[in-house]
Length: 148
Image (cartoon, rainbow, N blue to C red; front, top):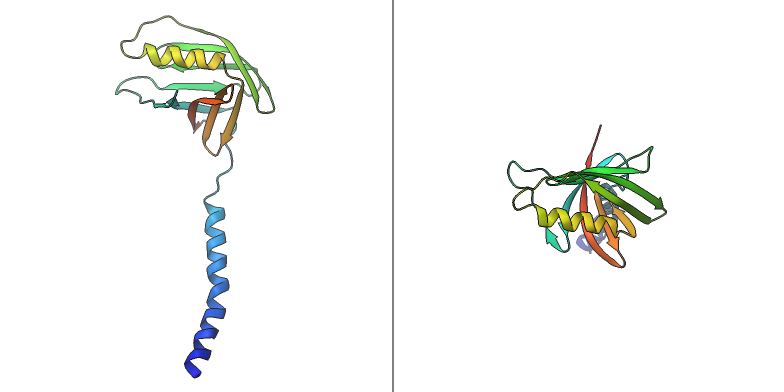
């Protein structure tokens, strides 16, 4: 009987500790959402395909101006710029203008990225991931890289 009582006391004291430790570790893993502006958004997925930066190549990225309604970035070969309009989660980008260099093996991704930007209708940020939508489909996922 004494063993059962001791066991129940241990369980009663340990159970709240287990609950507290579980809830606090859950809160530590939750990151706040990155800001759309003043963040370098690097392309990681385009039209359901993983995007890799070749060794010695340029990253595909976009920057949204904080105090202006301008975007700029790189398509992996050419630099681009344009305007954007944000209203809640709605987002319109473009028209996009760019330099006109040719880079072997990079043009298909760049063209698809520029076309996608101009058909963007909304966005969603979840932690460090920016999802861009054209209609109801995510066409691009970008990862936040913070600027000073």
